[in-house]
Image (cartoon, rainbow, N blue to C red; front, side, top):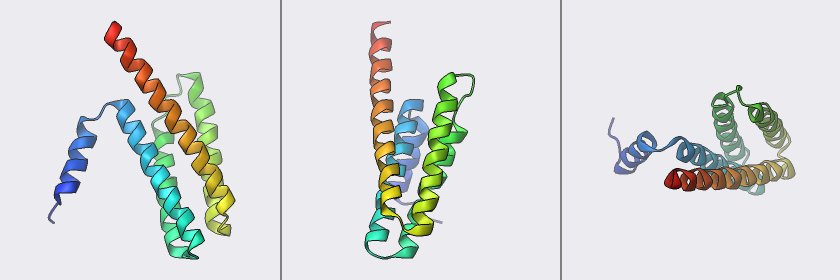
Length: 128
């Protein structure tokens, strides 16, 4: 099987990314996929909506798997991720654009928070 240049680039990017960069990449993928799922609903394309909502769910499961429960915030994040999974299932089963849009809003907000945390951490490391 031939691997395209873009696939090689993406693979190298993931292998060299920091933990915070990988987290942002997961969020970026989930955001892109939920948007595509919403497009599927708007286009009345059930297969497209299903495919992309399932991809979003897979990424959220990865986010859950990455949680370290020795930190208190992990329990809260787990609850938020579980809620998003529930909303994605509702969006997929009922083709409910409102539920999917709510997940999108949560993902965008959380991505921004993680990006800011990464910048803060980088700044602290510079002055350490």
